[in-house]
Image 1 (cartoon, rainbow, N blue to C red):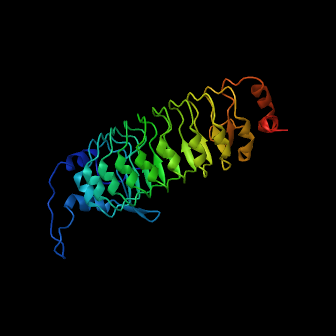
Image 2 (image 1 turned 30 degrees about the vertical axis):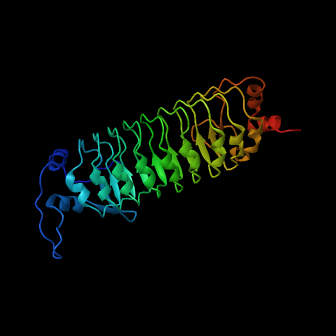
Amino acid sequence: MGGKQSHGFSSKELNEGSGRQRSKSSSRDGQPSLSSAAERFRKHTTVHFGYNTLSLAMRALVETPSELWELREVQKLNLSMNCLSSLPPALGALDNLVILNLWGNNLSSLPVEISLLKKLRVLFACRNRLSEVPEELGRCTRLEVLSLANNQITGLPNSLGAMHNLTKLNLSHNRIVHIPTCVYSMKGLVFLQLACNRLETIADQIQDLVNLKILIVEGNSIHSLPKTLCFLESLELLNVDFNDLQNVPVELYLLSRLGRLACHPMDKGLHIIHNPLLKPIKEVLQGGLSALYNYLKPT
């Protein structure tokens, strides 16, 4: 859901339209039809990869047009890169939403009615001003992708532990000191991004994320890695760069799928050299990951 604008509405028209009362006519079956403004919105929906899609990205919106919430058929809604500071409870009326993009606004909270979006599978709420997320979000159990990066979040409610379908979670660039307990219950996670927070430790429960392939915790203050991390045999990318690590667990050699030392941020492998590692680990690493594993393996 990129940042392309749909044509036909000006930013001024959208912002003014949100406060005006629109006339409604009666439909043939006797039920009230959509307002005239909502009908105009409908004309600008498109079918994208099989989903009814509406993009209002980059419109300088300070509030959402009230007519928007009449379009229950919308499945993908892009409100990114606007100036929204809140969303109304009416968000819950769009109960066919599958993808919701709120990236790059000024949102300080999400409405509890987000729990009514039972079909929601992807939620982008990164680059806002969120300090917390509502407990009710945990009822969106079909979520597969959740990005809350670049906010002011310190933790997550335990209710999010019910998100067993979640495969990708991005919590980078927040204010998290401890990995939220609910994360260890998200057994379906394949990708977990926690870079640039305030982490000092990783709990032993990390071993519960048996499907994890990518774990990124660079740019924190982690001083040691738990040996249980080494039981995640599916890991293909482990980024622990720019922490306070001086040593590594002996069991690290069990992570055979890492394959090599990596340098570029998203390269598969082990990212670790940018740490205050002590001798002899620091010297052994100069021979690459295989040299480190041979050193760690019991004889």
